[in-house]
Length: 135
Image 1 (cartoon, rainbow, N blue to C red):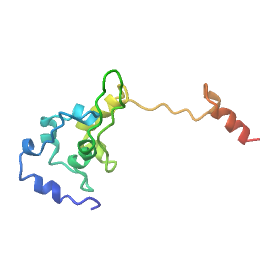
Image 2 (image 1 turned 45 degrees about the vertical axis):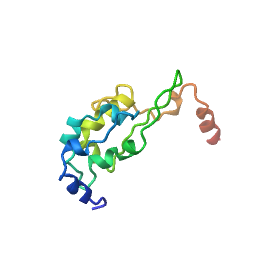
Image 3 (image 1 turned 60 degrees about the vertical axis):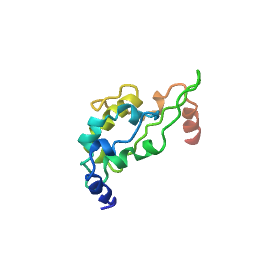
Image 4 (image 1 turned 135 degrees about the vertical axis):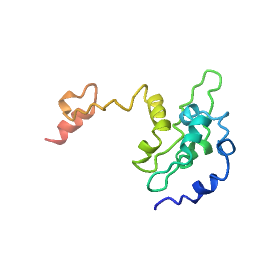
């Protein structure tokens, strides 16, 4: 197992309220979405490689992000990571709303549109580079 899960087993000695991080001063998408109720529902789950919800949110807990000052805006970070492909399914209750929020409404049912035809590029200098490289 790539990730040791002893931390997940030990934390179960405490309540979700005791383990839930204080995100009141955080400015990232994870802190915006994660609730105590959601944390309580996800805290005993893990992927087959041992990745837990605490692993998912740790970067957002450690790096709270910056709050906008006056009229200056800061880029809001995501505040979480996926440890493996299975993370997206096991922790979808947390990750789907984060992805939707970060990507302007992109839902789990949406599909990326792929067009690999360079003739369809618009306002892009790369098309000229591609054409020149084929000479």
